[in-house]
Amino acid sequence: MPTPYAYFKKQFVPLAEAKIGVMTHAFNYGTGCFEGIRGNWNEQDERVYLFRLRDHFLRLGRSCRILKIDLPYSPEELCDIATKLVGMCGYTEDVYLRPIAYKSSEVVGVRMHNLEDDLVMYVTPFGPYLDLEKGIRCMTSSWRRVDELSIPARAKVTGIYVNSALAKTEAQENGFDEAVMLASDGHVSEGSGENIFIVEDGTLITPSHSDNILVGITRDTVIRLAREELGIETVERPIARAELYTADECFMTGTAAHVTAVVDVDRRPVGNGKTGAITAHLQKLYLDVICCKNNKYADWCTPA
Ligand code: PMP
Image (cartoon, rainbow, N blue to C red; front, top):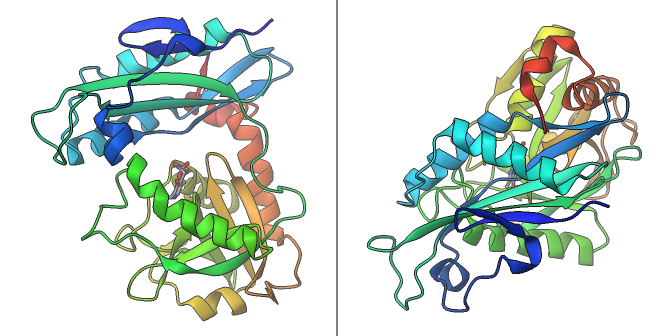
């Protein structure tokens, strides 16, 4: 029987015992950095593979530098803790690993400095997040993606997710599956928890690092798979909202979302309103790679 454990205050404990106090700084002010990492169950090998684990911890390290969070672990030590934790839990299905490095002082006062930091990691079963088969219908959000000059979007900061949550709820309450957020200059930025790509004349186009995106690991994976497996290059440039309406294909990428087709934006079908050919090809490649079913990319998969 799988048992949920957490890594909390430098120890492995049952998940139910990993509790923080109500005065914790990160709980009050959103001063934490986190990652979402998938562990993908491989039936044949009967094990969970963690996807691009080290890359997630490298990004966590960069987020922590922006928030002045002291993360006293090397990426390798974090990988060891993660694999041990996932192994201990014993899940035989897809899981989600959530490390959070956070301001742990129980003190009132908004700031980043002179506070204690801590790290927690937990694991939870996690199936599909969006409809991989049918694709999703999106709306352009009335909420703008948080601007670099307000909170750097490239840092995966817990507090930033209020921005994502506002957009996601607006989209779902209006009958859509997901939101497309524009940057404050009006260009397309990303989804509430996904990066976005369009396909035009056989080329991939995605917003660049300077369009207030979280620089996604799935985004990078797809850029590399497109280049190496399909011979398709990706152009990183600003995308206008209306380009979403005229694109041949559109899809979103993310650890939770995998590669999901966007089949409709603002009640306009994208292409023929079905998952496009390039999207479908990338989705299939990606789903094999993350379960360690493609030897060429086995380095990206860490067995738990
Ligand atoms: N943008 C946002 C806002 C996200 O929360 C995520 C999910 N981490 C992504 C993009 C995709 O990033 P990744 O592919 O690394 O999961």
